Picture 1 (cartoon, helix red, strand yellow):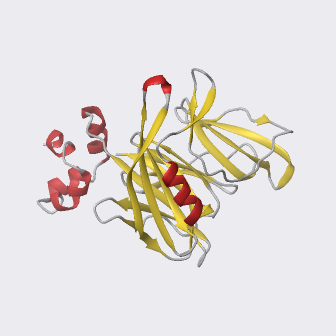
Picture 2 (picture 1 turned 90 degrees about the vertical axis):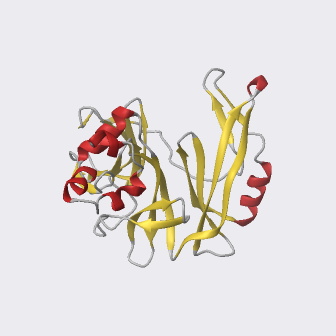
Length: 273
């Protein structure tokens, strides 16, 4: 029975759980997600972290593709500190902040705390390379002293910290979609999305957007300038053509609001369940 339910789409699990107590127990168990992975039946889900200006906390939402609306994950606890850095790793979301670090298990939306950082950091940026999460930022609140911490997702431990005294952390916006060619070690402009870039340059707040790799596609969440309370999204598929050029195609452009309110887009994430 577990193998059969593992092949059922997760969006149908609430209805399946109504059949019987045994079915409800199966679809709510961690083992069903492990079985989905071993059978190759996993699905990609879009999660978005929004900072709520009203109560000054980060909240976690998931995108319902059928209705094209963002739905709040109620298990996300509002006492979590704002301005965290987020990294998606399979069915987990790693969260790093100056105060604490933890994992959100998206199979159950429960929280597991991680070991403390070797030293406190602020203005954090984090990403994963080869199973290790690199967290960069300021030492404490000292903007003249920078460092990089490395967290091993296999051993769940912090490695020896690296100090980078001359590192600079800056931000900005350039309205052009580029792809990096690791073989030739160069960047190239993605063709076919010129109209999209022009439209985003016209209507999007440059500081209110986030992008993620979602099941091999690029998904952009953004907030419009003329309607600062509406969050929308675009989905782009990519392909390499003859000559090595990367071309993009806009598969979906949502002009209607996914959610309305006083939010700032912090991060978009691709979670595999």
